[in-house]
Image (cartoon, rainbow, N blue to C red; front, side, top):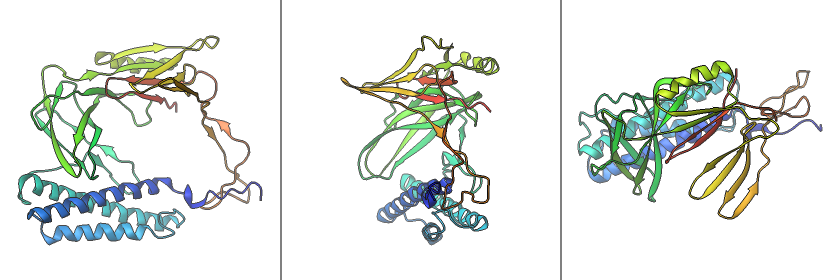
Length: 343
């Protein structure tokens, strides 16, 4: 039929498709770290290798044509999800024990390693650990790729009064951003995002120190809030204690343009709804006509399922041409543009 779209297993249960990709990354990292301990003569006991085997088998099981495709019945999907979660935890244990052995030369060293992300269950989103910077904290960063890599490390911390030191004892640039609530609408008091650059050699571990101090040695982000409802504005003003905050409402007749500029490009966003309008790289500008649309599904006898998508009509715009709340967080290391969800 004309209104039957075969989106099928390409889009069904995207949460578990993403979970699979995360698991593949953890397994590869665990494989490499364990191999490095064997080469260094500090291999963990056989029980740790057995966890690596479990992780491989469970991930392989999820590759079934009703597993990663998302086309299995609910009870089967739950079983798959639990197996992938078990595999993830097994791989992370292998990574932790192996990294500890490589750093200390002893697999039994009394060092506790905690991952930055935690998953409470097979169907929950990962949550970031809150790093309590009441004393110097070690942060280990691992590059599982065979090429040199420069990337940004993002951590959740409880204070802005800190500095970041690399393995040579040198203070490095860092930035402090606000943390938003789960629905991304309001500022979370008492939590901050710490961002700093990490320079890693291929297949290497690097350790950084997050050190408490009497003043902040990081740049505090600037925050621009647009079209916020009055109740939200009152709550967001708590950020003023730490960050530079500005508010504005756009005149519909003369809408402003919000720009985010880096050394390589300039991105311009609509001052009305926050959607991307233009990107400029060097002397070349490209106009962008961005929109987000949403389809409904039929409620009659024929309904959408794991294989077929049956829309109930034409798509409607999610972010329309009216004023829509959004925010821009800017800083020397990272700048972020995002819409605010109003429930």
